Structures are given as C-alpha cells and as structure tokens.
Length: 429
Image: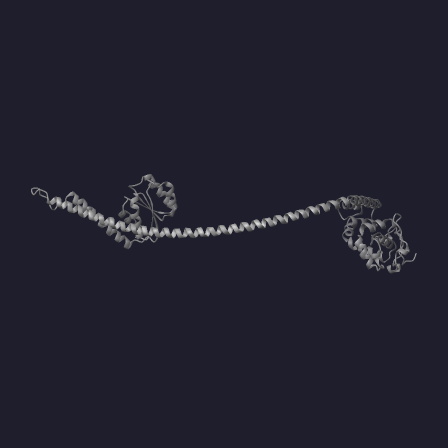
C-alpha cells in the first residue's frame, strides 16, 4: 500500500472506505514513521504507545470514544483533506481510524490532540502504580474522567492486560447502552414534540391572561391613584377648614376674655357700690339711734369692721396684683391649678395671663375626673394645689406624679387669688 493513501479501517466490524470515496487522498501527507509492532522491551523513558503502534482492534473504539465529532471535523480541515464537508460523520470517523493505524498526518494530529486533551489523566496515571490502574478505572466509570482514563489505559505500556480488557469491555457495553437510550429517546421523540407543542400553546395562553391581568391591575391602580388624589384634596380642604375654625375659636376666645374682663370690672364696681351703700345705711341707722345710747367713736361696729376689712383686703389684693404684674414673669409657663371652685377659674386665668403664663384648671374631683388630671399633668410646667380643697391622699398622689414627671409642685394654704399670686411670685421672682 502507498504511504500517501488512506487505508481502509482495520476494525472487522466497521465498513471499509474505498479509495474512490476520498478525493485527492495524497493531500493527507506522506507517512513519516512506518508502522512497527509493539516492542517486547519498551524503553523506560517513554511508557506510552503511539496510535499507529496499537493493535487495530483498539483504534475504532478509541477514536469514537475520545474524539468528538466537532474535534474530528476541525482536525479534518487542519489535515488538508480536500473538501472535508462532503463526508458524513461516519466517513470522517473511518478516515481518522485508518490514518491512526498508518501514522499519516490526520493520525498524528489526532494523537497530538489526545496528548493535550488528556494531559491531566496522563499525569495522574504516571504518578500511580500500575497495580492501582483498575481502581482508577472504576472511579472513572462512577463519574470521573472516563475518556481520558480510557485513552491512557489503552496507550500505556504498563497497563495490565486484564485491566485493558476490562476497559475495552466496559466501553463496548456503554456504547450499547447509549445506543439503546438513543433508540428509546427516538421512540419518545414524537410524543415529546407533541407535549412540547401543547405546553407552548398553554404558555402562550397564560401569557395572554397575564397581559390582560396586568392591564386590569394597571387600570385599577390608575383608579385608586385618582381616588387617593381626591382624598388628599379633601383632607387638605378639611385641614384648611379646621385651621380657619381654630383661628375663629381663638378670636372668639379673645373676645370672650375681654368681655369677661369688662364684666369683672363691673362686678368690682358693683361690689364697691354695695359696700358704700352698706356704709351709708349703717350711718343712717346710727344717726337715728336714741341719744342716751352712747357710741364709742373710737371703736367701730362689727359691720363697719367687716366692711372695712373687706375693703382693705380688696385694696391689698389690687395693690398686690399691681406689684406682681410688675415683678413676676412666667415666660410662657403652663400652670395647672388643682382644686377650688370653678367660678374662681376665670380670675386665676386672668392673673396667670397677666404674668405671661397659661392656666389649666382642674376642680380636684368635683366634676373633673382622674383621667382628665392624667391628661393635664404632662402638659404643665408647674402645679398649684390649695390644701384646704383636696384630700391629703390626693395631694400626695399629685406630688408623686410631679416628681416622676419633673414638674414643679407648689402647695398653698387656701384657694384664693392672692395666695396664688404670692406662690407664683415666690416661685418665679
């Protein structure tokens, strides 16, 4: 046989290619190394056989197992085979099996590919004693590097014959199992294609439903957005109305307080007029008494004493209010007055406001309950309690709450305007 021609496969079970099936077979290149039978005494420096040094029965399974179809086609272009695309996968397989047997250019390129591709497997087997080769092969069958291990076992001179025969048998049976699996897959392929088409239609139907739901959700979201904007607008209007109402209430409160001040002034004038009239009545009564009854002019009557004392007290309160207003400044502090009569509250409030403060009033439990007291206490800066109006236990409770909330506590002897003024003047001089 000419060294530039591609020989037919030496595998007895594979079909042979006729020389006419390959165009210009001389393009494969000349055979550089003639075929030699495996040496009985291999050199220790190189323990691996070339492909063309192997027995022909190993080449078909070795090429088919260790080289993929894309790798074979790339090597066919590198091997300068004329128009390699005209050949089927089976024809290219036979060409490379024959080239590996003869050691021509395609076979040498194929061996170079195997040496680079299975470098890790070659190193692993070199570092392992040949008695452990069968263990390595079993590990490869369980999911390791099957193709690389098979190449090394076939080409390694140190591989025991039993291990090599086992590897060949395992690969042979795997090819049968793979073929059976492919036939089963081909049998199920029409059903799978039908199921695939059905699933595609279902997915398209679900996509249409999904699109409709998205549009519906977007429409609902738009409607809810409009409702939200409407509610926000109504809320702003209500807040504006509440603000205006609060301003109106504040203005009305100022007007009522001014009226209250005028009424208080009128009441004071009426009281003074009443006191004056009472004095005149007493004077008239004294003038009409019998002359034999001597009246000690140095000692006034009890009624005169009472009226005078009331007048003096009123004058002292007026003078004291003037002194307080000129010396005491609460700087906007909030005063909580607990106890006393409700009718005293306006007078207490006027006094505190004159001192630049704000008054909260709690009657001590007559009408206002504990719940309102608990609400007012945290708002106050100072708490005033007349001890003659509420019980000792209530005073103790209020004092403890003031200590807990760090609020100033001012107990006074009685519920009166002058007592409140003196307590505030002493607390905030």
